[in-house]
Length: 152
Image (tube, rainbow, N blue to C red; front, top):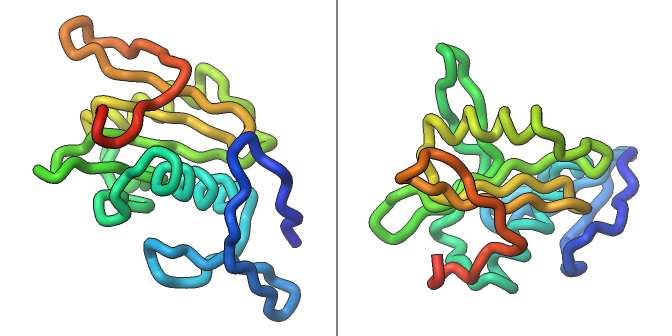
């Protein structure tokens, strides 16, 4: 059974339930209960941070969007769109015990080679890496924080 660990994100009043020794968290965007895994704990916190702190519209956040990479079906954790339907941000969530290493960044970069989002975020709930795509130079510039939605 998963025991939630404190993260480097504000606490949020999640709806957590338990059934047959399995712990569930209610996903407000998908309107369903999900098994509470360490990665889901991070994902739900980061989504709430986007909505409540960074003013991201709920309707423009997609969870577990599919993509095909090297003829393999993959899923990105979170995609954020603008009102024109363009992908603004790719967010990859890892369990708190998974370190954000160059190889983890490379995985997200490969996903973003398909999505072409202007922003990329990697988080394990404890460490957050924010990068903005420099289209002219074809590389990412790392920043300390992501702006609010309207400033993207």
